[in-house]
Amino acid sequence: MKKRGLIAVLAAIMVMASSVFCFADEEGLKLLSSYPEDGQTNTSIENVGVKLYFNHTFKNADVQKANKDLVYIVDSKGKKIDTKVLFSDKEDGMVLVVADNTKKAAKISNSEKYMLVVDAEFTDDDGHKLGERATVTFKTYNQKFNNIVNVVMMAVMFGGIMILTVKQQKDQQEEEKAAKQKTDKDNSFNPYKEAKKTGKSVDEVIAEEEARRAKLDKKRKRKKKDAPIEKNVKIVHCSDYLNNVYHVHAPNPVNKKKKAEAKKEAPAKNTKKGKKK
Image (cartoon, rainbow, N blue to C red; front, side):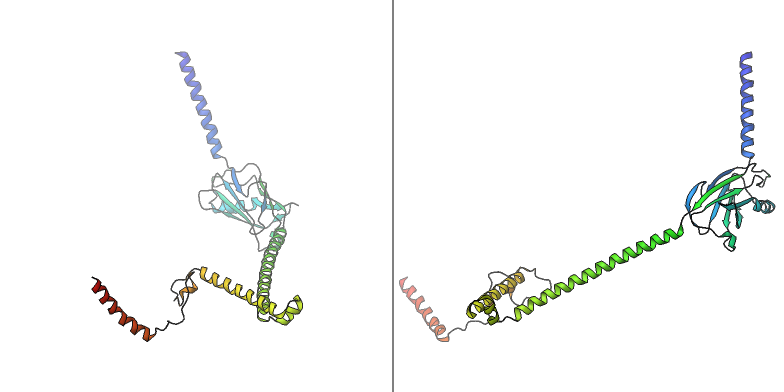
């Protein structure tokens, strides 16, 4: 019985001690997080600011006034940067420290290390102090280098587009030139020059040229026939689209005498057939 009572007393003491520590921990002012985080690099040089999140609020006007001089930003040489300190009216305990761009001392440099400092005397609405100095370090990225890289990439992209455009225009011009030369060659055939050039007779050269042109015309007609028939297109000659179909330019006239003789012979044949029956 005594052992059980001793165990109960010890358990009660331990619970009370832990609750006291928890209460003390909740009462103290602490910096929970920040953005940018401590040690972050490549932060923007425009609208430089640091968000601080505490476990308590800073809504009281007198508290805000007293705390404004207890948080600041310094450069790598320890020189203070002109800043503005803004306190949140919500329960999130947020404090925003931004560089004051209206002043020359707030100029932020490329690829420079900066440190935000929160003094140990920084106090919340309930009068709790931070107790020890808190810092957040960050480094800005090189804006000039990034601008150069962007300009180079834009130049390469537009240069590539220009090269492709010029190449396409050049290829198109060469195709048109080749087609024109071929047409001119077909239209400007001179049998005497060709005979002199090849050493053949004029008749042979003319015959070869006629055969070549006939073959070319046949090939073109075949392509035209093999081409698909477009919809809503009036077909004038079926022979242009169908193989083994030929177009007749005019009907063949029928001889009237032969037609009359055929009519006379028709009934005579019928009578002969009737007699045989």
